[in-house]
Length: 411
Image 1: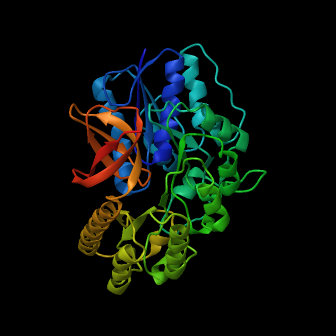
Image 2 (image 1 turned 180 degrees about the vertical axis):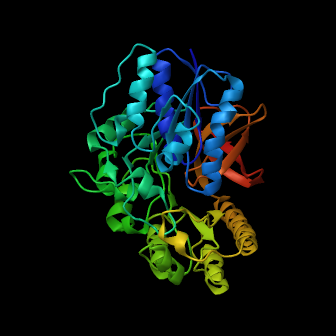
Image 3 (image 1 turned 90 degrees about the horizontal axis):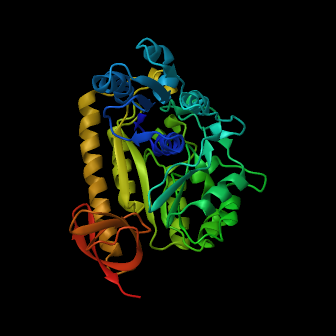
């Protein structure tokens, strides 16, 4: 039986889809991640923006072009937000961002199998991972309720996985890098404490540990010391920002100021002088003036950010910001272009700062001439020859494509 698991949205969706793939393959299915002819389609949807919701609804007709009689299973944030919109399309099964393990129970029946429901976080199986990177989901949900974000209403409140489950999955991962991910990993809690306690439990692993997005609230000396004490830590901190203006941050319900964000960046550099601090910034939030936006531009260089994921504000029904007066589309578009341009300059500067330094690179894909991989600071590195699956020391010698060219150093 052929199955397609197709994913829109965030890294957590991708990890959960990898869990679906692992389960389906264990039951004997031939699984693809691309839309193609199949007997079963599992469509993992997204609702972070209006456009993502629209694309999610369109997935059903796209799948049925390949096989009108296929069984179609829909899950994710878009179907959590508007289940009826998908049920009206006559799909086989619909659940939301929550209840994905229940969907696996239904899929298991097609193969004469059973799938148990017994733990937190939807107890999905360990995801199918690449040869070089394993993703381990440590929690689900968010309690922050930022004024622009619909995700807490769809994913629900924070649910942390038991520490022993996470530790076992990390140590069992047959990959040189493990990424700890979730909707808000800064909110992770277990009987021993928070994220710092979990990291302490992982101090024995040889795998390079990389963190998903973190919030200012988790960054303190205890947390950074736990990162430092790992055998092999990727010093990249995706420290969520959203705006460089304190006034806009307050309107966003972000619970920190510009000055506090910069203080957290300074603390990170104290522990990891060559750290890559990456972030997200929204252009054109309703409360944003031109002066506020200029503060978002200036904080990029002031915080020495390595990369910026920039996107325009998208009003989401059901959030506090939905009731605010939206800025004209042309204003948001113009600000987004300026933000992207400033982010590109920052990425160039960060690569420049790393050129003379030794790097550990996990090599991932060979294109016939160059193998590409990632440094600890998440610079995309290229080296001539096939080094797929290897971990080497290297030096970056210059800008190349969307990253840097590297010379591998012999042991």
